[in-house]
Image (tube, helix red, strand yellow):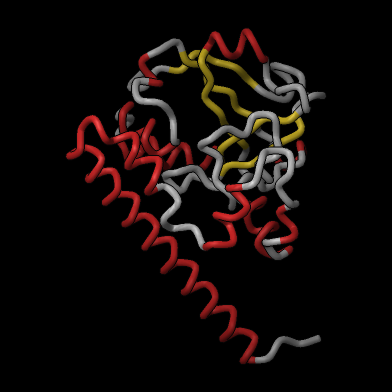
Amino acid sequence: MARSKLDGAADTVKDQLRETFERIARLHRKRARDRARKMGDDAEAIRERDRFDHLPDSLRDVHAMDQYTRPPTSTYFSEDDLADHASRFDGGGTRFVRADDWRRFGLTRDDGTTFVMSTAEVEDLMDRTGGDPDLMAQELGLADGFFDGDILRIDIPDARGANARMPSGNEDGANEWWLPGGTLPGGISEATIDGGSLVEDVDFTVKPFRLGG
């Protein structure tokens, strides 16, 4: 069936609203980080409170549920939204892990899944932050000083082939910093993949990572 001009106009409005929402969310996160820096010892408390402010009530309700009891993402996002999210991983998926955690867990947790970020967005983040380790950690929702340790970078070029999808929060690797909607605290897209059958140096690479070189 041919699309009408009204259909096109509706899509344009939807895109404009999404862009506006994302701009507001980015501005809010910047202001929250600025307030946290000024508050010193209360920074973590502010970070914990403010990271939810850009989420609609329905997604806050999902986050408040106990892990392993949260609903499928298809119950609160449309097929188009989920497909759009998955397309952000056409260029692959990336994750940073502490070397100790890699030796302990390997690529996946017990459920066979692992979290990855959009490789393209990670590269863009590195350009935008100039590789500043503190800014990188903030944007990725990682602990302060994370990049000061022994860090590995894992790249999965065919993340889509490993069923990259929006995380539901029921995954073994979902922690208190997980946010519904498939984004990290700084707005970087994250997905869950099925990594149990992936082979190192065939399906993914593991390399030491140092910012600035």
